[in-house]
Length: 337
Image (cartoon, helix red, strand yellow):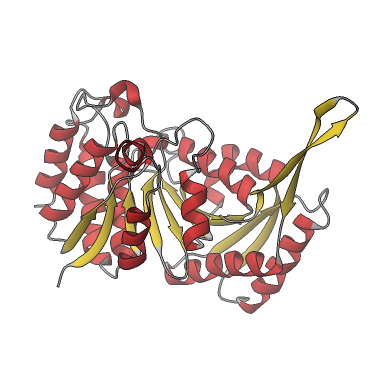
């Protein structure tokens, strides 16, 4: 029986790279029943809602979604799409792998960044403070870190390391300054790490030092776990080390749902021109297949994708070539054999 999966093509280049990804998965023999839904500007156009209830209902039913880049409309009354999805499905773990396909400045990067996805500064507890006649004289944002949230994200990182044959987990924090919120995250991390002692190495890094070491010796890191804001920043940094956002997949994991996505933007300047690189969404689809228990097929697709890039003859513009989306997709499909 085909596995039902919600497909949200997205905005801008989203429909183009989504169609390319669907073609590649079909060519590899993946048995998926796509439930096509809309969100972002397409959701506004159809339902006047960037994250329509029909789309949420689909994800509740399938519990798995593949999502292209989405544009959140500017203006009052519209919810942030990513925040709405995280809150609705409690997608607490954001997983961002970054590894070298074609050696550049660095030859052997293979990092998985695990970001806490629901707490910290991004929880959205903020307000203005009136002073005298100025209603916006000051702004206050509160970073909320809980023991529960910290434990489940650190545990996820360790369990991910064990499941994928990884050797080390690096916990990134700022507990030297933020002694309560970041201190709690660090204390809980140390507690969880003791349970995995002898099976997975553990180390701690302060965020500013971590940012420096990532651009000096990134090959020393394996699985990295951190809080929401730090994870947002570091995940883009590690993507930049291996070629940029065009090769950056992401997964948002919760207990009852998982959403896999291309983490780059909608690139409206090249939308509809058949020049976009579908790589990030293809790699996200591989993560999705692994989540669904089809790791062999995921590895086959990943091997064909990487081989096409390394061959260097059929590449999209961002990868240094002149091929269009369709031509590049055809080359990946041919490489599947």
